[in-house]
Length: 129
Image 1 (cartoon, rainbow, N blue to C red):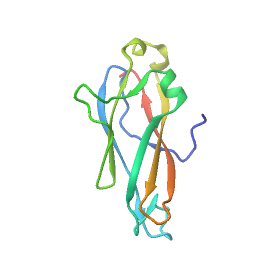
Image 2: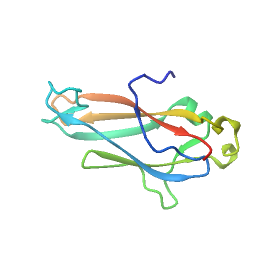
Image 3: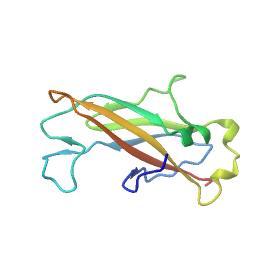
Image 4: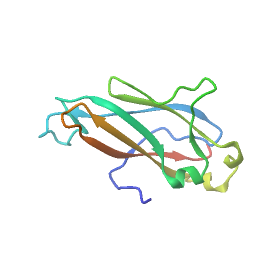
């Protein structure tokens, strides 16, 4: 999957040996706002999913859940999630400078009637630190 040029980037790079909690904010506002918000101020998020791109899976990126790591959560329009790299891939040269930018897909359904579905790409760079 090609990463869209307007994908929202997580500023903090991830070292392959890190296990980090990261977050992204869902923008909300009026329909004529610039830049356009992800959801309107008349709606909220009813449900969401966060998935890895095929390239991210192949590189060993994981969304951590279980063993004390919570599933991705939504609170006050902030999606919080834990990322790690599979230990078998941590030594891969893929992560040498400048690193590898990998994509996650955030899909949400809104409370509007009928419900709107929005999908956006989020990126994280995995690089040896």
